[in-house]
Length: 478
Image 1 (tube, rainbow, N blue to C red):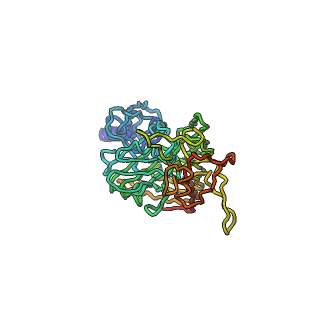
Image 2: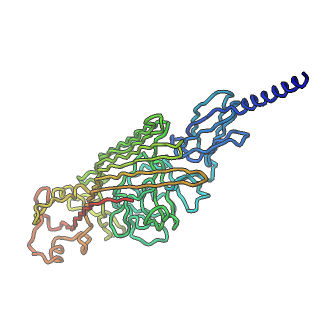
């Protein structure tokens, strides 16, 4: 009888231990998204249950999921360059969603960047030299050209004297004529133009900045060749904003004297509850230009992407595209008058100061050819019409093994129309007598003004402009 009671007691203690064990191992799940101030997901942020070894890191879209004991505790969110945040999880509160927005730490020495590859890394630990401009920095620049942005980056000299496009980009230590010869311009890790060196088309002709850009990164040095063809001196890579669980909608309007108007927009967020997200951005603008030429700048650009997460956030597919139909004016210099002690802008035949020789009067210029009449597109300036489609696949296998694959197809029609400064021989204004003599023309030839047909006075000066137009068809892919 005593043995039976003793056996029952042991059995009771054993069952109590089992039930206690089950009680201690009861779990609840906490999940959410970690973002920065602009609702941009943070990749690789640490989520840790304080005082334990339980933790995880955020995936490609800033998402995390963590199982913790039912008695709750304090979750600590960390990311290099941002202030630490702590959230208390109440006991037995069940599965719940906690989204966190981290704030940049002004005392941080390192910043995590994407570097056009698969995942983020710190500038300190990256094997190459990096310079990063975030979304807020790009918005503050409010620039009209790549040159305005890129000249703020150490090691780069950017020349945008011709206007908004066709930036001449020089990297210290590399001889070139500019136009991204050794430093391609990329969007989301894929070059805008896939040919280098043997072309006279600057990459920024095919792309304009808008407010849908997450950041700009300049990766300098020979190791940048791992990220794209032609990147001997480095790459200039823009990363686009991608949608997240937090919707983001912005409109930016710009107006200025002289007939300038531009409207930018961004909208992003979830498309469904099963890991489908979108982001769309673009602009429309009209600008009569800093110089009164009668040939305005006008056009638009739309960009967008759709992202799908699967395999519990370990994999993602992104489809993105661009449509651009935009034109800008390309300005070349008019020679200054240096006959005195200082170079000054010359005075024209009408007594007014000369700023440019571009003129809308030539917008209708035409001539006959064996194939019909050719009408000059000089009034349209630098025109780009086309776009690209791109697909990205990413998957994390674990143990730092990852797959990243991208492909892109693009097609553009592009006109490059501009006035050249002078005729290549006489690049300064001349009086009519010398103009005729230098070119072997009859001495009794006469010139008239386009606007009123009046003959030039004897003391009026002439300056010969050439007109250049090139048309390109083509696309690129990778």
